[in-house]
Every structure is written in structure tokens, then in C-alpha cells.
Image (cartoon, rainbow, N blue to C red):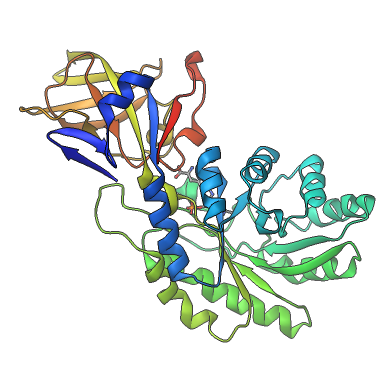
Length: 386
Ligand code: LLP
């Protein structure tokens, strides 16, 4: 994906300084090839599953169009994402709708286009979806999003399958939800959905999804409910240090014993694992300050362009676009008037000067998609290397 050729950072075969000179900075740069390699890895590991890519990770129209051409579906959580996915050519019957606060407008639109399933987030959502389906004379295909109430080791913000989380139907309400759904002529129970967290890097954290899903399929069937599909969500983490990481093949190996013989169609909703490594954010050094015994390298984008470090304490690798001799330890800071606007502390960099370019790595997922206009800075532009 990225590599140095004669000390100049390249994305695939394109030199990054050329991109910065032509398009300006800050700029998100994505490799379509890297995304394709990752989709193939998932498809090889899960040949019979629907890969419903989580658009929230990165909904660039060309990326979605490419994913559509590779046969992917989509997991969408808003009208904006639904529209984007459809415009990109993802067939509605390959789209699942997530969200804990789906609006009437979103539900109606998804019903009109004919999505594969609504992942119901609450017992309270059932009469709402039903009423809209009745009004439209439609039958809404639904899956129950079960919150198993687990304790995981990921960042609290990324832990959604835990006790007290506001996502999903708690175990004690699952059978009641199934009964409510099957009692309505305007709803059709298709399956169940579990997404327990994101950036999970240990198999012990990922494995329970399949184990619990299998248990719920059996329980629901014992009670006479039909379950055609299980959607095991996303969550496969990456290494932000450039170290070894789990692959979809590892995930299959962990899940297989639980899913064998279950006779269900499988849906997965990966986001990060598909796109994170495929993106870099190129920023320009504005000023280098020496104060308090530290070196602060201030660049032209911070928490407005890439929120992850400020929001989660995430650490992304930061590398020079042009390598040069010498070493400094520096804190890389953004331009926003806020002490949280630190991209990271104690980075080993060459002795950078104003005007030099730096690249922040592994920002293809939840980078640009979470960018904002804080301090009235424009959202960074994006460029795709294909
Ligand atoms: N399915 C559902 C229902 C989800 O809520 C998510 C992510 C995914 C799939 C995709 O998960 P992934 O494969 O990307 O782990 N902004 C955070 C991540 C939030 C994840 C939210 N849900 C970050 O920057 O790390």
C-alpha cells in the first residue's frame, strides 16, 4: 500500500509529494487496491456470507462503488448512508439497516427501496416499524439485534455489547420481541444480529459473537420461531502499530465450531478491517515550537480532520513524507484552540521544518467519516489512487 522509494513516501506507485502539490493539504489519500485486497481476504474466508460493509467507516462514493462491483452489500445507519450506498450501486437487497434511533423517514425510505433487513434495536422500535410498514402496505424484514451484555477489553466508547449499553435488545426481552414481530402481518422475522464491539484484536473477544448467536438461534427455534440468517456484525480490529493482526481466516476458525450445522445464512458487517490501512492523511507542518523542554510540531489539521486521537486516545503512526537524516522527539499537535487537539506525543521524526509534509497512517476507517468543521476549518478533501 504505502512504501518509501528513494526516501519519498508512495501510495501504490504514486509519490505523495506530487499529490500534495497538486491537490493541497490536508488530504486523505486512499488506495483502492488495498481495499480490494482486503475485501478478497474476507470473501475468501467467508465464501457464502454477505459482506455488508459498514459504511460508517468510510462512505466515499468511489469506494462504495468499488465495493459494489466486488459484490459487497452495506450496513447503513442513516438516510445519508442509505442514499450513498444505493447511489453507489449496492443493491437494496444487500443492505441492512442498523441504528438505535431510526427516524420514521429513514424507516419509510428503507422499506420503499426494499432493504434486506432492519436490525431492530429495541422492543420499543417494533410498533414504530410496524406502523410505517402498515401505512405503506409493506412487510418489513427484521432481525433482532441482541445485546448479550458482555464485558470486553476494548475502549469503553467502542464497547456496545455490554451491560448498560444503549444498543440492542437485552437478553430478557429477546423472546418477547420475537413474539411481537411474528404476531404482526407487517413484520417478518428473518434473523438475529450481534455486534459486540469494535477494534477487537483478540480472538477471545470475537469468538463469543458466534457462540451466543448459535445459542440464540437454537433458543428461538425451540420456541417455534424461524431464523434464516445471523448477522455477526463487524469488530475485527487492526494493528495501529504496524504489527501482526488477526485476519478473517482467524475469525472463521474461531466461529466455525459454533456455526457448523446451524443452517443459517451468514452476514458480516466489517468496516475498519477493510479500509483502515488503505488510507493516510497528509498534513503540512505549519510551525515548530520549542517550549517547556518539548518540541511541538504544529500541523494544518487536527481533531477537526481526525478525531480518533482526541476522542479515544488512539495512536496513529505518523511518518515523514520525505525522509531525511537526523532525529527529534516531538509532539504532533493540531491547529485547533483546544488542549485535546494533540495527534500524538513523543513521535520520533526527522528534524522537520515548516512546509514539510507528514503522513498519518491507518486513517482509512473513521477518519474522514468523523471529520468536522471545528474552528470553521473545512473538511479535508479525499483522493483515491486506483
Ligand atoms: N456493525 C455495527 C452495528 C456497528 O455499530 C459497527 C461499528 C460496525 C458494524 C463496524 O465495525 P468495525 O468492523 O468497523 O469495527 N469510531 C470508532 C469506531 C466506532 C464503531 C461503531 N460501530 C473508531 O474510530 O474507532
